[in-house]
Image (cartoon, rainbow, N blue to C red; front, side, top):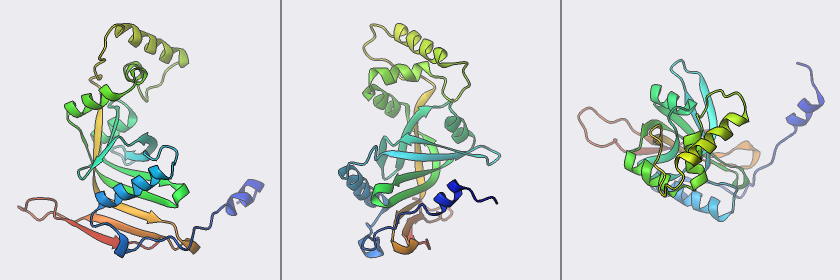
Length: 228
């Protein structure tokens, strides 16, 4: 491999994480939802830019992956919810291969949360309730954009927006498009990653245990420490 100036600079790009920060089993919450709520509140309190931004990874039926950043809009013990056009790449891929990963990259706090689990659509009432809370411009944008499809130029998108604005002129409550809705990632693992000195990071993972045949519930959770 040819060593270029950029290569040399990249090789030296690193931040040494604080030695006094850590995540131990003793100070971990009893469940992943409580721990996530705690860290999310701290990320909001630290005034991070869009602390609810997360990288969503999906894959098609051939296993070819894709990723993009979206905004978390709901979370509870059942999982994490975001909203999208179901005809988008992530929408199509989760329909065909209903699993996804999520990464919350809270770099400024030397933290990340990594989630993996099954994807399912939220019910229509939940979608409509969230859509009603969006700014009108975002509502029109959802009608205007054929998300992830190739278009000739920006003019196509602008024309679609104008058409949507005309269609709903005088309509106080714009309905959610039938092709648009929420997706919930029901976690099977939730990892809390805290940067430490010398790259010996703390990684504590909640893992859903297998449900035994004929039993009710999800079988519970275990906490595992992962090597960095």
